[in-house]
Length: 338
Image 1 (cartoon, rainbow, N blue to C red):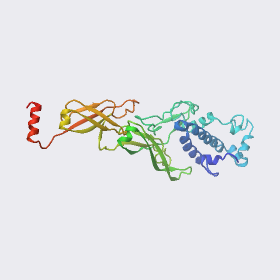
Image 2: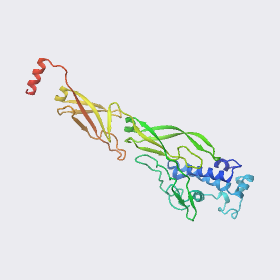
Image 3: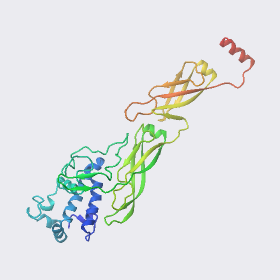
C-alpha cells in the first residue's frame, strides 16, 4: 500500500471521525515545527505526514479510495477530484498542513502570525527562556480563544497547572556547567481516550552561572488527562551546600586561616578553585581577624553576561598561639614596641 496513513495518525482502520480528530490534535501539537526548534527539519517532515494522513482519512471519499487502492489510487485522482492541486491528495504542501492546523486551533498558539496560513517555517519561535532557561512556561492557558481569518471561534481545551520538581546541582556544576539526563514517567492518553504510562529521557543543559530558582520548562511533558492538554513539566534549580565555598549572588566567598606570624609578616594564600585550578594570592598587608581580600573576576560566571564573572572574596581567620615562652613574649614586645 505504500504510505500507511493509519500508522502515521496512530489509529486503526475502524477509527471514527472523533478518534482521528483526537489523534491529529495530539500529534500536531507534539510535532509542530515551531514547538521543536532544536529538530525543526524532522518536525516539519512529521508534521506534514500527520496532516496529510488526516487530510486523506478524514475525507470519506479519499479514505474509501485509499482503503481499496492505496496511495497509488489517490495519485490517479484527476485535478477536479478533491480540489487539492494537480496531484489530488498528494499535492500536499506546508500550506495545506497549516490550514488543517488552523481548523483545529485557529490562529497559532505558538505566536508565529495570525490567520490559518501564518505558520510553518515563517516565524521566530516563542519557545525561549524564562530567566536564562531554554523553554517557555506553557503555550497558552484555558482562557485563550484562537480565531482563524474567518468567523469561526475555537476554545482551547483546558491546560492544567505545571508540574514542578527540584533539580539539585553542586556548586561545581553551576560553575562550569553540566548536562543532566532526567528519566521521567508520565500518564498519556492514546487515540482511543485510554490512559497509559510512558517513560522518556529529558536532557537538561545546565548553563554556567545559573542560580537557585532558575526554571527549565518542558512544554507538555507532564501528565495528560482526557479532554485536557498535557501539563508542562518544570525543573527548578536547587543549589547543594558546598563544604568550602559559599555563594553570594555572582561572588564566591571562602575562609582562609593564617598564623599570627603570617598575618603580621605576610604570606601567600593558595586557593583551589571550583574548576580545578590553584590560585596563588600574595598577602602583603597586615591581616587582622575578619579582614577580607577581593580577587577580581574569580567568582561565579554571570549567566547573562558571557565571559564575565563575579569576584572571589577571601575572608581571613588568624590563628593565635595558645602559649608563648618568656623569650617569645619579650621578643614580641620588643618587635612591636610594647
